[in-house]
Image 1 (spheres, rainbow, N blue to C red):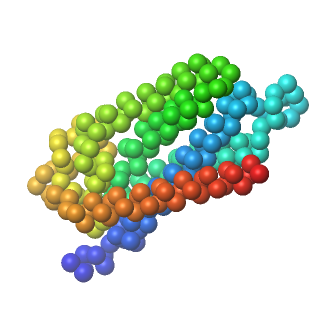
Image 2 (image 1 turned 180 degrees about the vertical axis):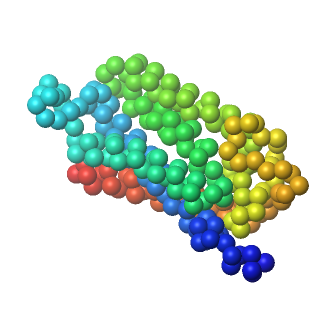
Image 3 (image 1 turned 30 degrees about the vertical axis):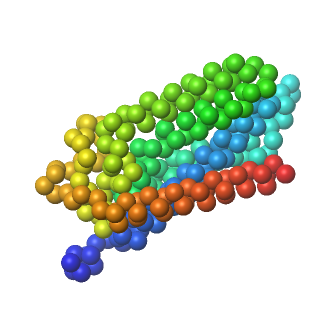
Length: 215
């Protein structure tokens, strides 16, 4: 076993898998927090802001919105790429959960922000539309294999974990049952706890960064 582990490339080691999964959830949560706050600030401005002579009739975009809106989108994509490239199937599956979380978060934010705002119906309708865009993929993922979405497709060692059901053709990672092992309590703890802790830190970091930029 030691010979097998020592022959692995650095990017396929358990430590890199854990670091990749943790980092991806931290970056994703921070980016989501920044994007949601930027969207809420935009709602408060009536949905339009700009800068420069081309936007003379629009409200000036706050610095936080102008900086963090594009930065958050880059961060969301980067987080998924880190998960795919470094976590490699270990941990809570960000590539499967990123879209539902992002759109459900935006949907809930728009619905809450619509209360007391001008054109509240429009913002609430937009929020419900975003929520639907997030809920539909989430239902598909949970129906395909809820266990693997949260326990991961692989253990931290890289060995494939047993599939709960026969996965559909669009599922990113599939293994034959003969080569898999059922996820144990250790696998669940390593998959879920670091991801949730990193997401919590990421949310705090995103809120703190936006508030600092907003003054």
